[in-house]
Image 1 (cartoon, rainbow, N blue to C red):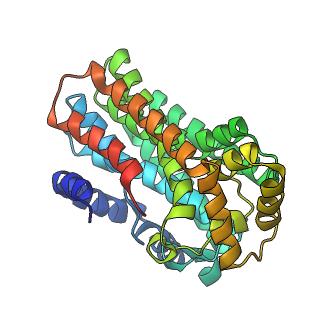
Image 2: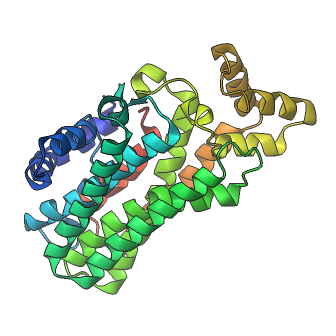
Length: 326
């Protein structure tokens, strides 16, 4: 465990333990099959980034009631639902080092349990008795669905632009992390200024988090990452490191890169050649640079708050989004 990760964990471990308990107790399905399928994705080693951001955002605004931890489960249930659906749509076989849910319980069960988690999230959100929170959760769900559809429409397309990539990750990832922070502020009855600051923090952190995640497909050890080598490419997903390198490569190298990308059965050696080209044409460096700029923007958004342990912790979480290796 890195020094920064250990530092963060030491400060949030009590909150994480409470969140784990809330996730288990609030699931409350009628059918054992739903419980088994949902638990397979919920308790397989997730980072709990979204719920911990809700709790910390509320604390930053002066709210410490345990109710924030119950509401924080909304964001983990939403996230888990999208993973169940995405794995099926993408034809994935491994998630976090384990077989995907649909390979165990079947496609229909995975879809329907994902639907259950979406509904459970909305049900818990309604307990806030705040139409604003319910509207935010509903809009997040709409955005994530459309982001996935957008990505599906462009699956395997070699001409995906950087702006279109950013649009997809905004809907698929950034809005959920943004909402996690914003709802924490709303629970605390924060001022519009502070709510916007946490919303901006979450949005920029969300974009950086996804960019960093996309980098891992080309820089991390597949064993520690918990998925097969080149998984994004094999699922037809063009991400920023590839988009950037293709845009600046010379015609010969560009043709070679395209040949590897469009061959779903590329070898480990071909993947290594592709990664070398991503480095040669600064696709990885460029992605890390843009992610770093988003992290800087996220931390700058928190400057409206007085210096505090919680603000420092949120800044550390932002920094770790780039440092992490899994």
